Image (cartoon, rainbow, N blue to C red; front, side, top):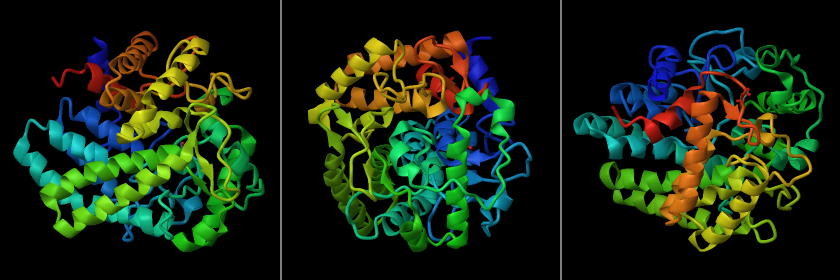
Length: 420
Ligand code: DGY
């Protein structure tokens, strides 16, 4: 079986009848940003199924516009924390926090690349109001004072759970929890590839805290000791706003277009505050101490994905080349020169195909085809050698974490699937 056939078989195996699990057992529900990428993968061979992925994710959207990071469509004991720990009143049950808003970019991608134009028009028109409502939520709930950068209140919201960028902000979060911690992930994957126990205690402390705050956005924002302007989330949101604007020009009103343009200007201006000259890339901002996070991560290249920072593209490419000199496969999730770099541990070093796809897209857009092609080639070689793993060790190239991963399959199909 070719790798493209394996990738399609993986998506089919992870299909739960309209939505995809990231992989069986380790992640037995629907995850927000996973599904955005997975929809683009499905679209290479089954456009109708791709749209279903989006519609199923939106079944979890809250009335205020928030799209949760997990939608618990069907029960499973394989994952902690399940719906009872979150204590969210919603049908279907959901978590109470969100994840990087790739969704509008995915919908635009599906709409732009559609072979079935009529279906794409109907589907995009039907989800556009939900996307608009979601982007309004980001501003109202996470940037109520209109500084320009949205706040992220939990490392899980960044999608890069144990990134070294969060070491400082996370250290402020107490380790005591009300909910007993019953990790399942370390029964399924080597604990050395997962976040540490102490990080989980802090992750769950935040869940307890927000549940006590009734999942009310203003209260969450004021009580959270973890409050960061994540460069990844803000860059992805900026890109998503630009894609939403394209959708608004087709499906929305003139005032809605103006509203989106205002947000684009505000985020674009604020994103420049995250440039770190010494490190040669963008970094996240701790919104409690107002200090820039001192560690470079792969998220620091994502402003290019938002068609932002063109003037800095050569410097970003040089930084990436320096990282490539230390870690043979691009793009490690943390600066390989950082003392706390851990090539096997989740977001502290390994390469993630979805992040590579976004960074390569950014370099291609600013005209650096060489860097874009190096990232693409490295990613394809990793997958063809090590399989459809959750993530990859950047020095040995070993496939690690969960196996048969949906979003890795999706990226392979977008790059090599040929749309057949
Ligand atoms: C996990 O459980 O590992 C996820 O990253 C949280 O969404």
